[in-house]
Length: 174
Length: 159
Image (cartoon, rainbow over all chains, first blue to last red; front, side, top):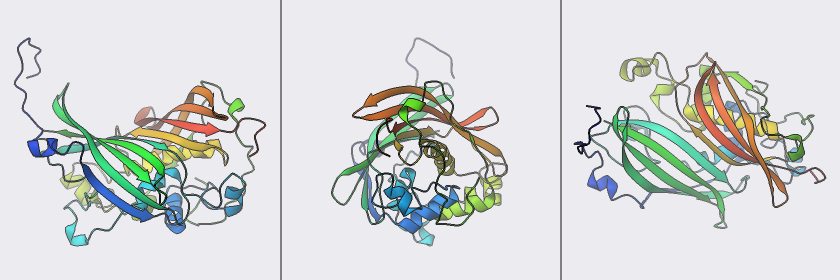
C-alpha cells in the first residue's frame, strides 16, 4: 500500500465537492462582550495571578486604562450558547468551525493554532469573530492520505479595528 | 502554582520589569511546572463553555475514545504555555504572537512543564521584539511545541 512506484497511485478523493466549495466562505461569525468576571474565571482556572488581569492600579501603571483580558481568552469572549439537546453525542457543540463533512475521513484531530495579537481587550469591548475556510488540501502522509483544513479567523472590535488574527488547522484521516 | 481559586487582589509584583536589553538568544524562560487535577479541568471547561465528555466522563474517555483516563484540555495546555510567557515578560511586556500545536495528550495527575527559549531579538518602532521557541512537556516528551513573539520595553523607556 505504501510502496513507492513511478506509476500514479490510486488515491481516494477524501474531499467531497460540498466541502471543497466552502473554501473562501465564512463558516462562522459571532460577537460577544469581553467581561472582566468571565476572563478572571478563565484566568484562575489557568492558575494565573498576573496582576494585569486582576489589578486596576497595576494595569494603569503599565499603559492600560484598566485591567485587561489575557490575550488567549479572546476566543471565548465570542462564544454563544448551545441548547443541551443539540450537543453532539460527545458533548461538544461543534459550532465554531462550520459543518465541513468528510465522510471518508472521519477521524479528526486538532492541528495547531497561530495567533497575532494587535492589542489587548478590556471590560466592555465588543469583539466580532469571523472565520473563513482558507484551504482544504488532501495530502499524502507516511501513514496514508489525509485532509488538512485551514481556517483564517479575524477578531475586530466595536470600532472595526483588528484586535487579533488567527490561523487554525485540523487534520482528518480515513 | 501560586494562585488559588480566589479572584481579585494579587500582590503587586516585586520582580523587576524585564527589558529588551536583559534578554539574549539562547536564554531559557523560568519553567512553569503544573500537575493539572480534575478540579482545575472542571473549572477550565466551565470557563470555556466546553461540554466535551472526554474531559470529565471517564467511561466515555475509556470505552468510546480508547484513552486511559479523561484528557487535559488542549486549550488549557496552550493557556499554561502562554502563562509561562506572560509571567516572564511582566506588566510592560506584551504578547504579540503565539502559536502551538497539539501533538500528544496529557492526563490529570501528570507533572507537566511549560517553558521556552529565546531564538531571536530585534528592535522595531521603539520596542524590543523577542522570538521564543516554547513547549509544553511531560518529562522529555514534547506534548505541545510552539512559538511566541513578545514585545519588551527598551531601557530608558517609562514603564
